[in-house]
Amino acid sequence: MIDAIKATLVEAVRAAGATMQQRVGQVTVQYKTSWSDLVTEVDRAVEEAVFDLVKHRFPEHGMLGEEGGGAFDREYTWILDPLDGTTNFAHSLPNFVCSLACCRGKEAVAGAIYDPSRDELFLAIKGEGATLNGHPIRVDGAGVLREALIGTNLLWDLRENRFFSLPELQNLGRQVRGVRSLGAAALELAYVACGRLTGFAQYQLSPWDFAAGALLVAEAGGQVSQFDGSPIDMSLPSTVVASNGRVHGELISFLRQG
Ligand code: IPD
Ligand code: CA
Ligand code: CA
Image (tube, rainbow, N blue to C red; front, side, top):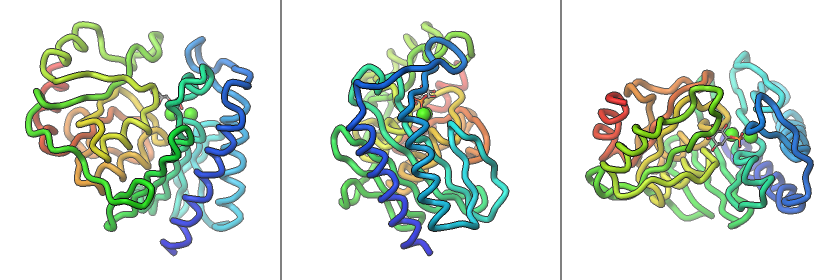
C-alpha cells in the first residue's frame, strides 16, 4: 500500500507543478475572504486534477482540500493544498508549491511537496525518512536561537489575528540570526526539513498548509508542535512551530512570552 501511496503522491504533485509552470503570470485572481486572500483558476484546476487521480487509485479514501473542503471520515484521508503561495504565484514570484499528504486516522503516513520553479521534490514516508529529489535530508545543526534562521509570515491578513505584531517580530529579530518570510508555509516547512531554515513559526495555519511539511520535518530529525508545545492535530487549524529540535525549547519559550 505505501508504495502505491508514494507513487501517487509523486505523480500528483509533479503534474500539479507542471500546470503551475504553464500558467504562472497568466491567471485571473479572485478574492476569497479579503483583498489579500486570493484564489486563481489554477488552484481550483489543480485540486480537481489531484483529487481525480487519488479517487481513481484509492476510491475508498477520503479527501480534504483547501478549495473543496472535505472531512476525516475514512480510514485514510488525503490532505491537499493545491497551490501554497497563491499570492506569490499571482505575482510570478517563484515561491509556490503543491503540498499533498496521506493520513491514516489523523497520523500522516506520507507527504510530498513539489516546487516547480526549482524542480525540487520533497518526500517523506513515516518511519523511512525524508528526501529532496531522492537524496536524504536533515534539519540544520544550530544549537541556539542566536544561530537560527527563522521563517514566519508577515502581516498575512490584518483582518484576522494571523500574524505576529511588530513588537513581537522585533523581539524575535533580537533573539535570532535572521527572520525570513517566503510567503508559502509548506515551502518554509520543507526548508526546515532540509536545513535551509532552522525553524518556522506561524499563527493559525490550516491542515493543508502543514500536513506534508510537518511529516517532512519530523522525518528529517526535527520537531513540530503548537506554540504551547502540544502536538498538532492534523484535522484542525493550529498554530505551528517547526524546528531542528535543538532550538525548539528556546523557540517555544519565546512564543509563549509573546
Ligand atoms: C498561505 C501561505 C502563506 C501563509 C498563509 C497561508 P495559500 O497559503 O502559506 O505563506 O502565511 O497563512 O494561508 O493561501 O497561499 O495557499
Ligand atoms: Ca496554503
Ligand atoms: Ca492554497
